[in-house]
Image 1 (cartoon, rainbow, N blue to C red):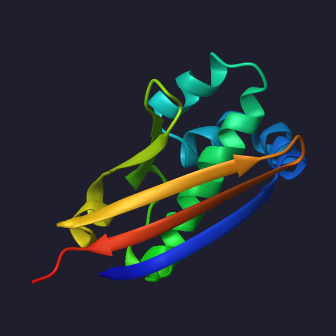
Image 2: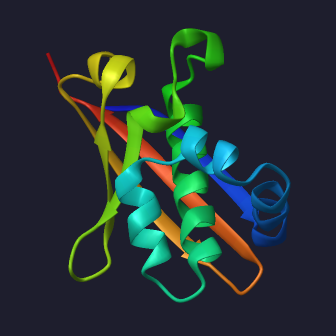
Length: 125
């Protein structure tokens, strides 16, 4: 059963400005060490960070608890399998909230914009 859907659009230049303004304070608040390492090893690392940011936002929207509901940026870690397919690993309170659920994500981007979509599917029962 579909429990929630979320979508987010990120203008890459806005993320670049946030990084320029707040630097590591921003990066370490939003992204896990694994996400930062992944992006830093890629061409156009900001594009990869923007994609991860958009996925985190789309999962938060699908969860629909709001920030007061315990969502934390690093509780959602975005990964890619060898073919490039994105997935999320959940931690902390978000993991507890979504125990027994499946979270599916998709990412698309152009040179300037990233779009991410998340679906939360709860097991019947």
